[in-house]
Length: 486
Image 1 (cartoon, rainbow, N blue to C red):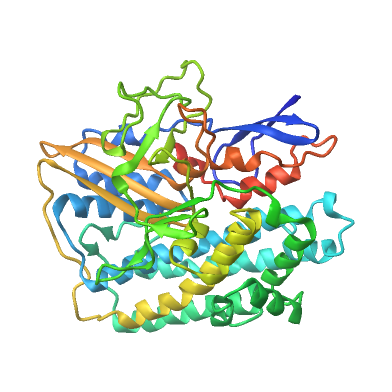
Image 2 (cartoon, rainbow, N blue to C red; image 1 turned 180 degrees about the vertical axis):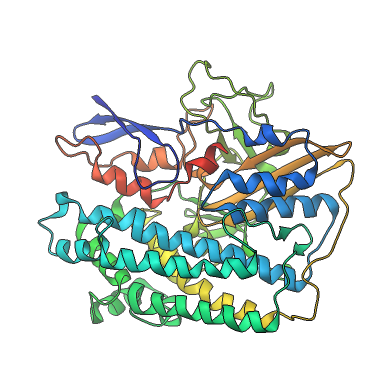
């Protein structure tokens, strides 16, 4: 058996290192290290509760709205506030704008450039993949960057700026949208739709979202295999076996995305289990963080619920190998992300493909692309539902003592903020980010996290120092390491 340390990784957000034990050309075990410490949870202690709205967006430069939304919901829960319908819709629009931009960035800039590497030069699709996706040169990748830039101009009107948008508040949005602005925003949304339909899908969004089985997807692909980048991805995935690479734990967590004024989530909350093929209710009280292998102090009673969580660095701790704690749900490893949202909300194609292949490189990427096609039409409906003459925000006062929780869905999955306030100041603030779940270390029982388990069995070719299969698996989770170590 040999040991291989892979890292730092390029084309991921933040610092990441993976230690592999390799035997007979396959990964036998893996340990995932988030090597950077930042300490945002400590920075917040002693501050006024509203300071969280300024501090937590700075955790990340690409998913700052997600952090803002989770913080605002935690404060709303603390204060007993409920945003008016306009505030709900505008918050959803800002969050969706950021999440969909992240999906686009992941596909074109983080994931697909690997298929333009020389290791694939003999494949029949290599030339087309290089033309479209080669790093810094791919025609479609460059077009996606331009589309993303124009897409983010939405945020200038909706929230004032991006990143670190400050209009997301516990009582809604502090930025009211006028009738004339809504028309201009819809035009930007339709421009983004046009890019997706012409370049990514080569088909209307509704046609893609309506694909309800593997047979339907295969038939749709076969009609024109090179039309649109999704079809090219499907051909690549089938050719090199991405459906069998990087199998996840079989349990998928969604906090629920895009709540509506009536309280329901358009992408449902719950835990989908591959064994039962059913969605179970999310038991938030059964979330815990195990710090056995993190450079963090542990609670006297073992793993702690985030409301009681500790952020006390212990850099010389024996047996530790990462700054990331190990979140668990009822003591079990779960995976989160677009795949979890689509499984929990019952998308038939995603459920069938996961039942067939499991949570793999192929199904994770497919779920993101299905989500893109589903959410853009939802955004059009939210714009239509805005009532410019009605409130976008309700004021409220924070109590001197109390606690709150804010659950949201970032592009990469389930995000939770837990706040405790005493005498008008933050006494404790804990964050469990999507990549904290997916890239967790082993727990006290020695059970590896989702990525650590998914890497087992990955092929390592002779002479590889950064195995391409490992790169595919890591990037299929779309890690955001700066949020992980917050």
